[in-house]
Image (cartoon, rainbow, N blue to C red; front, top):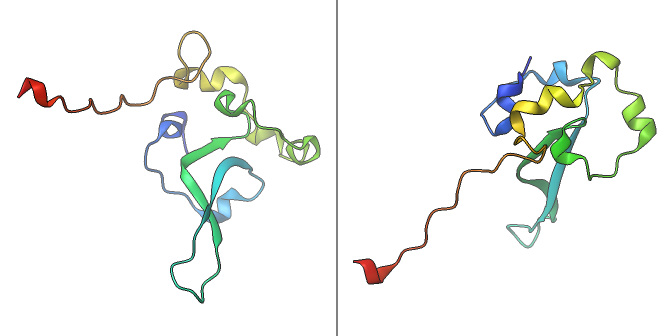
Length: 106
């Protein structure tokens, strides 16, 4: 099982057969074909993959019937994700961007 500590960008390994009955929210991007004979395709857009109950994905519209089909043991309450959020309930900041080079300081 993947723990809460893995939900903030850590590498994870999983058994695809254990994923039966689970759902995730993932941001996808249209990828362009590499060769003229290839088709365009969908792929993950970065690492934006979330548990369906993750407050960081609360704004995503979800199908109530699909969410209702998830077995209860796979659902999580908001407090499960508390360590991933800042104290104000918003997502914790990601790693700071690299500072821009200032060549005047050289």
